[in-house]
Picture 1 (cartoon, rainbow, N blue to C red):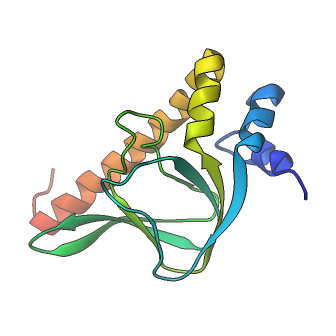
Picture 2: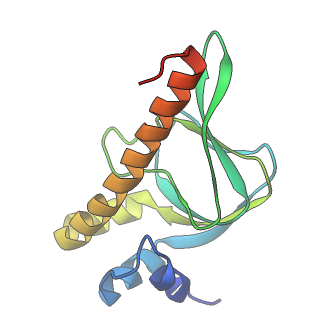
Length: 153
C-alpha cells in the first residue's frame, strides 16, 4: 500500500507544512469513493473527517423548509470539503452530496484533533488554513442566499 504523504505534500492546501506534520496527516488519511447522489456529510451529524477531493464534483447544500435543498457551492478536484471536525461541537453545518462519482482522501478528524492537542504548532497551521476555507464557504452562502431571496448587497 502506497503512502498518501507525497500527494498531501504537493497539495496546495497543505504545501509548506513541516515534514513531520505531513507524516501525521498521512497517518490519519485514507482513500474513499462516493457514488452519484451519495451524501458525504449531513447537517447536524457528527463531524469527524475532512476531505481532499481528488476527482468528481460535490454539491454543498443547505436545506430550507420552503425551498428544499439549496446548492450553495459546487466543488471539485483539488478542493477541501469539511471544516466542522475542527470546531466544537464537531457537527456538520451543511449537507454535501456527490453529483459525480467522487474520489477523495479522507482525513480522520478525531485522529487529527488528538495530534493537534499534542502538537499545537500543527493545530495552529491547520486552523490558519481552514479559516480560509470557512471564509470562502460563508461568502458563497451569502451570495447564494442573496440570489435566492433577491437581496443584493
